[in-house]
Length: 67
Image (cartoon, rainbow, N blue to C red; front, side, top):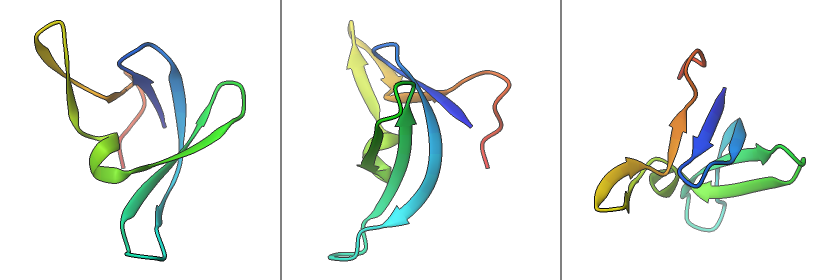
């Protein structure tokens, strides 16, 4: 499944993981250039303010199903 970052980049969801130290749920995702990133799940799915409006930090691309 692919997501668009609010700044425009498209990222591929890789998997959900758990941080060993404190059991924080993480989202692992890959950029178009192949770099792999990890972000806490609640941050990945949070809303951010852009031009006075609340938008998802990462929004699923149309046609990609959310599991």
